[in-house]
Image 1 (cartoon, rainbow, N blue to C red):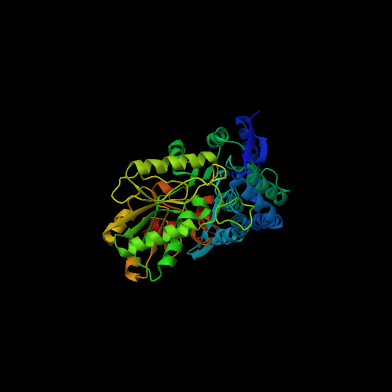
Image 2: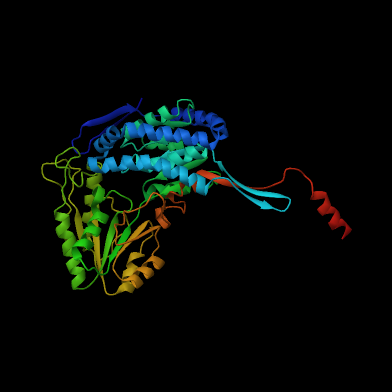
Length: 474
């Protein structure tokens, strides 16, 4: 028996302990989900919507407890995890609306009948969750998948099993009359591999670009499996002018350093003009970043950011920063540990990489690379010089430049005068290139949770012989 444990990255305290599911347990869960699917699919959508409503009620009743669980497992401050749980609750209403709008039933009259558009669930969906938003992000797959009529087998990140367990308890309460429609299995890589290799109809994944590339290869010969990938990004933020440098710097800091840089939509590359304004902006960002409060999730006053997810994550990020320095990057703000804290704690770092060749890689930490360019053509070229395409940001009062930036940016989320991490639940969220596979989530999750069925229907066969007779006489 293999045990799985999660720890508070700030204190090292044990948060959760349980058994890791082996291949046999995974296969059994998939078989149960397969058997539960026909009855769940056959229910009226209103019944499934009502179940989702009960899940929302269960989350609401436990929102403070679940926020604390997420904070303990991820190290995120409580203000941020409370917002995450609120997003989970809000996702239910948004998913219900999206299902009706994007995957509902539509009818239109035609000669001798009517055209009917219906949507049908795929079957058994596997959901793999990330550690950075262990509730909100898998929730964004699970809720629309279940409303559409699929059954779900969910494996949380091995770093955040307690959050997954709490979600499973809420679903168990909502699905008391519908066993095995939703199941949560715990485990690490081997558990995930068994789930992916099993008899599934869809894989809904949020995580790294490297894992996404692996899944593309794994499913190359399995076209029957719907694959929705929400991956990372090496996201650019172009700041070209600003009436208030301090306000522009605040957009940069929120883009780059929120959640200790552990958002897939965080700005990784700051692109500024090689000018007096560009230098002033960089100085203002560095000054503001130095003021960021760092601490454990349960400290008072509450910090703005906590630690990285683990000591190992911090070591990996430091190695990446050291590599950039070895390539010639100049340190603007050192990326270091925090004295008296666990090794998972780090300070925001900034490096000037102008004229330096740097790998096109995402550093999943509060590290910002600064590039100074001669003109806006060079800024656009630098912004798009990436194999990723998740988010991009532009700070400027110039409407004409914004129109060009919005047109030419290769990203799924393109923001103006707002952080790159800003997104609306009523809009799609996802990227292209190495950031996804053209199946954005959020409001558009309804699109990949069901497939369209187009029908031409009539109540009786009348009219067909007449048409044939006319053709024969002709």
